[in-house]
Length: 425
Image (cartoon, rainbow, N blue to C red; front, side):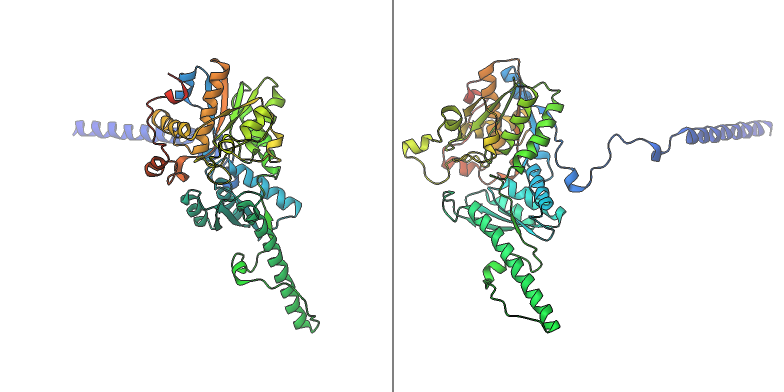
């Protein structure tokens, strides 16, 4: 029996020891509620916009001898750099009183800005009406409709035509204001009938087609006007530029990007050059756009116009979102030292190269920006730091830029094994 009592005593002692040790560890363990959080949760969707990472694009850096960095704007909630612009435009419109909750924001866009507006508008209690060219990748329309936006697809025409997608969007904002005014008058009349004080009004008659575009409780319309609205420029001057400066530790030699509205290029270039006047800023321009010649020669002129090869307005390129044949108010704010040209074939090849070597699945304008980064590296030589913008991912470019059938129709099937298409061996 003695061995049994000894074993029991040992077990009891061990049990007491373990209990005391557990109690000690429990009391010494800090409460999870007291653990300091490195970062507080961001405030809703809007709080998640901006502060995107700045990454080293390894393959291009190693190939050129420069540090080529890309600002990952495709990681914004709406999937592109245009989220910043959408927030700034809507906030400034609300502050000025030009837009009110319950109103509809209208915009003419080839996709990204429209998607961003449709993404953020509900956070402000607003709706979105978008007019886009009918040759834009169909998935962009599908995304917009899924986000709850009203979408009009129109044929591509010159900006001087009343039915250019931007001009149609501007009209829709005016119609929304008229629609809201009419219903306010109707409501006032109905109240007047109830009070016995009604009077006849000669308000306009709104046709059923237009009326279907806006909800009965629409408070009015606001034309975002991303091309001429300097809120676009300010979004990048006040946020994107400072982020690049901080994330790079101020170590930037070159900034390069394409321009559609010109807001990103202008806002970032102006901020960076104010911080360091030695930073060089360049434009990368796709086929059919006149900005390259405007920057380098002072005239808005395209090779396609000279050769009589233009097939449609505004220009012939599969690169969506950049390239234009007029100077916008936003672009006028840019501080540029020069410009480079890129081709559609180079953009296609670059996108496949980055996907294969870096795992970066980028859209057409992002690929063109990376061409600009390589051109800049070739121009200034190794040992420099070059920053560009990775505007959006390839997810909204599947039906055209990433379609083998579509590319083969235009002789753009990728075939390069490396960067030989840019003369980099």
